[in-house]
Image (cartoon, rainbow, N blue to C red; front, side, top):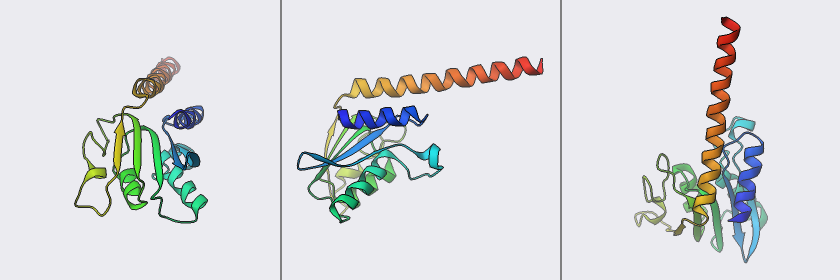
Length: 157
């Protein structure tokens, strides 16, 4: 999870929402990613998607059956779909996402027995640290927006 947190810090340095993910096979990181939606203006550039893509390249297969995913925030619907389709074995996530989480918060996609693959889920690993990173980021964004609004008012007034 520390490696996923390092990825999240990379996202934050780019003014992206600080979410990071790594795919691990046999104790080695074979895929890593952090949010890059703003940089590339691509909806699907979530940390999990980028980590899964890199892992698939590393093993030359779309199947990641012997792999585990570590991510700093509970995956959304899109990322949960990619996790299921890539056959990832275990997902370890830190912070819950009450507004978009599709693992435990809003939906339980990874454990839906109607689907062709189920994933072992482990929640709460380094939850407080990852939650704080997100809270600090959004606090900074709100402060920046407030300052910009005040500056615009001063220019107009």
